[in-house]
Length: 86
Length: 112
Image 1 (cartoon, each protein chain N blue to C red):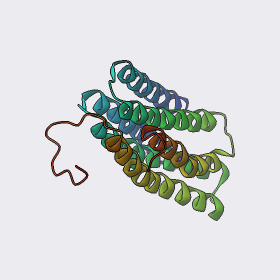
Image 2 (image 1 turned 60 degrees about the vertical axis):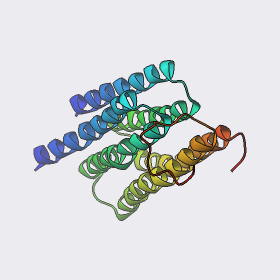
Image 3 (image 1 turned 135 degrees about the horizontal axis):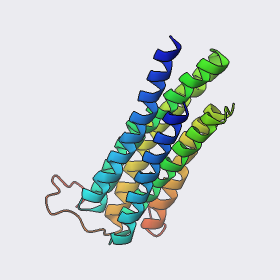
Image 4 (image 1 turned 180 degrees about the vertical axis):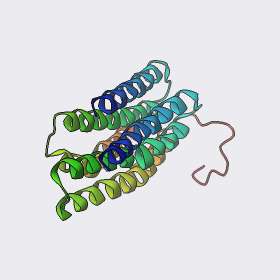
């Protein structure tokens, strides 16, 4: 189980670093918004894996809340991109 | 049986993470902001549901089966899939309206 957890965390961290490398070279705000979503999912996945390793019992609560609340961040980014217009 | 379940958890968790990694690689290769929003759906539509299912199976293996946990799993998976589509739609529309440069090959383009 430890091997599964740390392999998954390593892959997710690699994905986050690749996304952040993209931010360094991106020229438009939409790319930055997309990468910020990707990093959010990497953070949720890393939390799930480390929680699984430490036998936490709130993992599924956190997963369902993260799935339901994540839309707020994305929609806020969308409003920011259009400077408040719909 | 336990070995089989552990193997399944491993495939789900590592496979889900590989989907997220493939989304990140696709973001490096995409040529405009709208394509990057589009390739994100690989991470949200497949990667995260797989990882949550792996976590659920581990939960069943350690604590046993309960209906409440199954409902939480269904809410999480449905949330990730629905959120992915709705949020990507809103973000893509906002990106277009904010004047982000598009790939010249974008066609059809009903918002133009």
